Length: 295
Length: 295
Image (cartoon, rainbow over all chains, first blue to last red; front, side, top):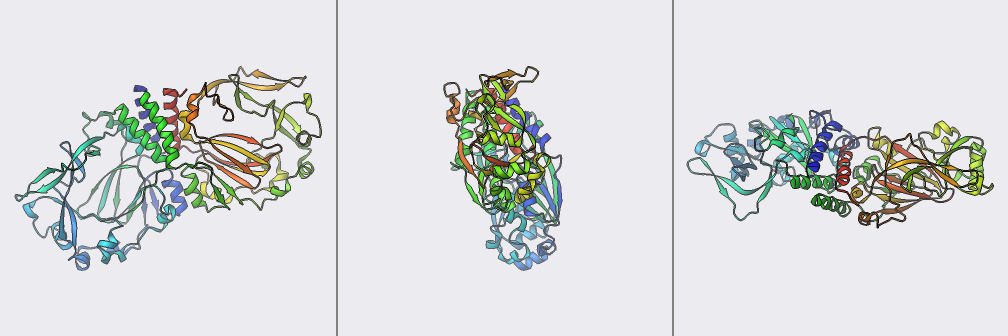
């Protein structure tokens, strides 16, 4: 088995030598669909596209004042965590945020520091994907394009699960790991749990006993426990910051960790997953890594 | 190791279930470059394109009479074998054809049965790829397009090694095996040798002692020795016939075996190889198969 394990490690390093770059490259302006497919989607490489949505009214228009006026009274779901870590492994549990229903303006009050949070703690995060924006906040849809022209042309509806993160304001910091780094990335099965803020403001973790265990990555890429997961030392994360007006192309099957600046607003476009040769190969590497054990 | 071996086999079967078809699909007419990239090149799937080079004068024009007139006096290289098996493993040697220099009209005399072959035996094959057609037979280049529009647009010069086989007359019969079938395909290292026709017409096999051993597939897909290579039973070859006026897209890294009808003429366009994620994954599977042994 050692020879398989070592070959998996070598495979991962080869990927970096062959076709991955040290940092996430920039593309200036909306690309031609074929060019985008050929250079990024096909090879499964991330990039940051600049000047691709300068024409969206959202880019300069989504100020707190405007959002309060347009959708302030709408009740939306907010994800609340004690520390901003949503969907992460903590104390051997896979912990998801407390979901809270609030008016948009109440959330803005908190984010802008106009009111004290209940109990004083917690990090608030509103998550809407492009597919539910038209349904839940139709008042805002005129401010962004309904789809990204060149991406829709490139992908139609039959390609791998691909993501475009468009940052409207603030900044998102990504740590990306290619699927070929899988041999160095630890996985485990974790008891699902959810945060619940108590009346005193502290958060407790409540197990969801009726839910199946969840496979998740226990390593924190911001502060990896290399004693416990020594193989992760060989992983080669790509870091990038996506600023207002920039759009990250996050290819299918890449591992990603995201942080955002306070009050960051972003719109995410995603496309359904297809099960192609890259998926086929990835599942092999995934299972072989599990067989040989990487930590 | 057995678990790795079995997982490799499962991987290969999954490829067929997920995205490979039972036969090679047809595409009618020259496709849009993006569509071709998205549907065939990206997913690494073969297809046969019909009605894509109807406008080539070669299609109806390359008759023996025309070829004699245009290039009959040219001296070209001909590959000669006793049985038509070129570049194949025979008696544990990797045997290449005898290369003979002859005028084009002498080759046509033989193919048309107008003269007896020296010694009476041998199969004659003239091989020219698109890149040397302009150099060696410039008289014929006006009869075919210099490149295939939509393929050149799709690939530029930076993509994997991809092939387009355009059959001008006669028929080519292909047996194709996807790269994901690698776990079932035996490989060995063979002493290179070359055919040489003796004065009595018989062919002898002469070892090329100064050449390194060549890795090659010893199995004959037309008559596989399943006693010796039992794993090949699980391979799932695709068979297709490419007829005059049809063009086979043979994706990079696919294994292929080709036969042609007597007097078949074809033009082959190929593009340089890039080393992308599919190549990266393939080399892993290749080595893991070698480690675990498949026969």
